[in-house]
Length: 468
Image (tube, rainbow, N blue to C red; front, side):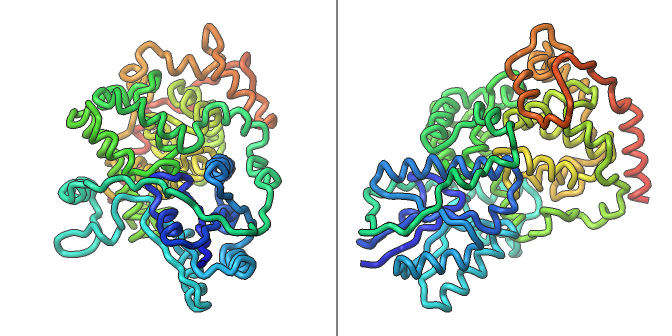
């Protein structure tokens, strides 16, 4: 009997898991392994914790099927080689990833294992389409979203989601495993991990529960998605990021729901394809993660990290809608999508701060952190990215709040200093933040960090000078 190592990375699920089914194909033994390797080591605080939680729940799921998840720490190639020697494995299977760091790791691992005589197999497991399968009529990747979306829709995505494996054959003797708890993956979050855990929905079962609840109201998504005080979104970004559910499973559920064909469903499926677009661009243009997509933006006079950015990080700008969002981020590890655009706009335009400062903070705080979507989102908001929002589109936080939080329900829920009754969410923020911030619920709320009209005019003048 052959022995296959199934290398689990961002596919912590049983259903619609092509990598797991490929590993289980045949009558051989399957040993699932999870590595704290050089890529995971570089994750920010909240993503690293959330990755560990996904692994913990998936390990429990595998145990219920008579299997196990073996944990090892170390760079991927030597760690896999050690496992191959210990187990006699002749094959290693994994789901592809497309960001620069993961591709560099995987390319090296595959070449080295093949040279060693090991069958190294990678499969599509994170996207609807491979980045090299969607091309323009003249060849090459799409650089604008709408024609990319149309090209995807022409394909008429109709695959059935894959079933979970019927069985996973276990070895007679399992290799030794690290204890996941000993890794202390939440250490960098300090006390914040216990707070964020109250808001996370971890594992495949939780993801399917969210999906089931969402498809019942998907028809209203077009309008509800812009109101942060209500649960109008699917909240599946957290589960998608770690592969606790696949984009195809979501796609099929929405297409098969009572709301299929409504404007709300169409808008939501467009968001799934926006994620796809981000990954395709990341694959073809890996520098998008940390370099301006448009070279001319290298001349823009953005500021490096600064005191204003620190006030932004702490939710102390004195601009209530923005501060509420930043506090939601630190407390829950997520942020409403409209507020992601708004907070990014304020930082990069009103405060003239480099988008990479904000991108780095989000990569530390988001439990739905996604290297492709995070970079694309920040470059879109800043104006420097592909198919980006025009720089002169500068969100006004006050008018945004009037339009999307007219009764200030969301804002008052998160800002204790100005609320009549302090909510549990607002208190949780002060329980999550570093003690060194020295913030509390009865402190004086600050005056606005910038006069919005003046900040807008300064940004537009800088933009005009750059273009000149």
